[in-house]
Length: 77
Picture 1 (cartoon, rainbow, N blue to C red):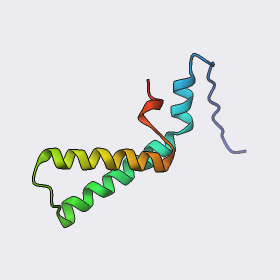
Picture 2: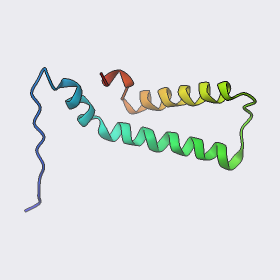
Picture 3: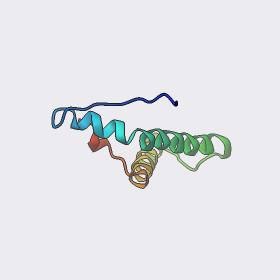
Picture 4: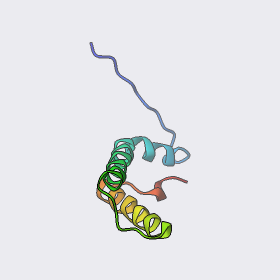
């Protein structure tokens, strides 16, 4: 018999925690995708001339990736 894990949440108090647990893979894959994008900038270079341009691009990419994965920072209280 395969071992199992059961998570128990008490709603509505634990809704935020339950949402994060339910979407944990989306958050993890978002981190992986963003890391890969940053690695490409390191490996192949970039055209950013100002730190603020790089920060804006990275934040935009983060939000795009999260949207594609069905997760949002709004899920975190």
